Every structure is written in C-alpha cells, then in structure tokens.
Length: 261
Image (cartoon, rainbow, N blue to C red):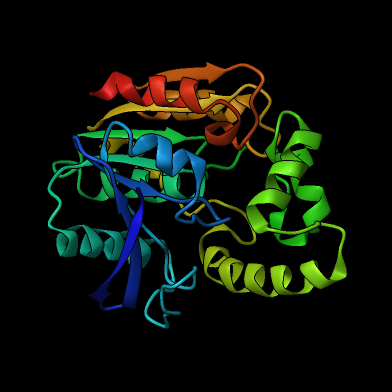
C-alpha cells in the first residue's frame, strides 16, 4: 500500500509517497510526475521501503520560488533526504529524476553509493538532438515515450482517467501539465543539458543504467554516452521498451535495479 505525507522544506510543503518494506529506496520521478497508483512505484514497494517525493509544482507539493536551477533542485533533494531521515538510500531516478540523482552523486560523491538511472536526461549529443517535449501535444507523447505507441496511448489515458482526444479531459490535463512543466522547464528547456558532462567524473556510486531499446526521446547513443561518462557503470538495455521502460517492462527494470542490492 502506498500512502502519502507532507514534509516541510525551504522550498515549501512537499508531498512524499511511501510504501513497502526492505532496503531504503528514494525514487525520483520523471517530468510527467508520479502518483500513488503508479504501477512501477507499487512494484518497487514489493521489495523496498520506497519514498517518492513529488517535486515542487507537482501534485500536492507546493509551488516554489526558491528553486531556479539544477544546483538548487539537487540541494533540495538532499534536504528531502534529511527530512525523511534517510542515509545513503538506493537512488532510483527516471528521466528528469535520473538527471537529479546523477547531479547528487556528482556533487556529493561520498554520500551516494548506489544508484539506478532509468533513461536519464542530462546530456546533449549534437548528432542526436532530443525532441522538444514542451511543444508536443498529448496525443504525440506515446510515439516518443513507448515502444508500442497504441498501448502507450491506452496506458496514458487510463492513468489520467480520461480520453486523450476529449476536450473536456484535455483542458484540465493541459492545465496540470503546464504547472508541472513549468518546474521541469527550469532544468530541461530549451535543451536538457546543464553541464553534467563536466561533473560526471566525480561520480563514485555503483551505477546501473537502464534503457529501453526503443527509446525515441533519448536514443541508444545517449545510453552509451552515460556508460562512458560514469566509470564502472553497467548498462542494461531492455528490448521492446521505450522511454517508459518502467511501465512497459516493469519486471526487467526491477531485475536491473536488483543488481545493486
């Protein structure tokens, strides 16, 4: 069972989902956010004591004027760890969350010893420009996010509780998405790169990189760039999965993370 509670930080009141028993795990969500009924969160809670904070501007977390850049959101996440009483948990970050986790490991290499980065943002390859997610309409997301776009469309509609083509559904969806992307844009717009490539050498954490073989947002060259950038990291490429590999191939993703136990 996943429950939620609020903690107070400099950035305001932050909502944290929590559940499961086992080793401590901090899950950092992607730009699309996370909810209590997220299937991957529930799956993690079968093997770990999971805490998943919602970024400021997401869900029940307050909006915040105190976070403007990558350093501030990274320090904010350390503040969240301290408030939760977590010491050296397994860090798992997806996309934007993976970018934040990697920054944490680079900034404080002696405080992060294990992390799983699931198709993380944070690098830019001129030969493989990343699609601009801020210009995509909801109906376009499945093509970029899922191996099976039709199944992804149904999954997104089910998760959001509505028909992706219904204006009555789309209006509140777009309003909420605008709020969330207003925070995510501070780190991902105009390109999802904030100099991490120059800090990656500092990372000491045992790292597993998890990638969907069909990721159209951050294609395979990004996976290999990450592996090259983090010394000793392992790369697990999962077939028939896209950027939303935690939802499309949950068991395979869990198995990859399990290498760090």
